Length: 43
Image (cartoon, rainbow, N blue to C red; front, side, top):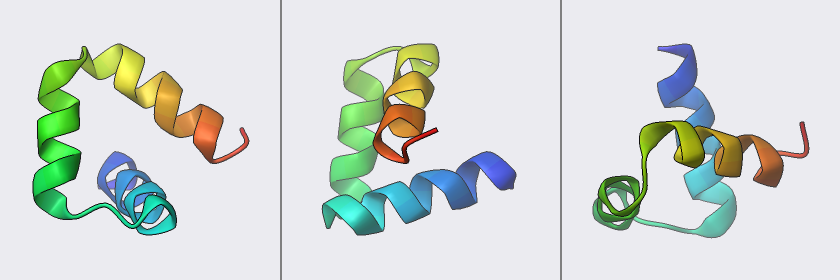
């Protein structure tokens, strides 16, 4: 749940739709995606 809410907040910042978010998540590995999301959130 925590990860999902974090990804949702990131997607809102980037104005990405759920479909775009899922497509991007499939493009790269989950671990890399989490690092990318954390970097965008400034952590």
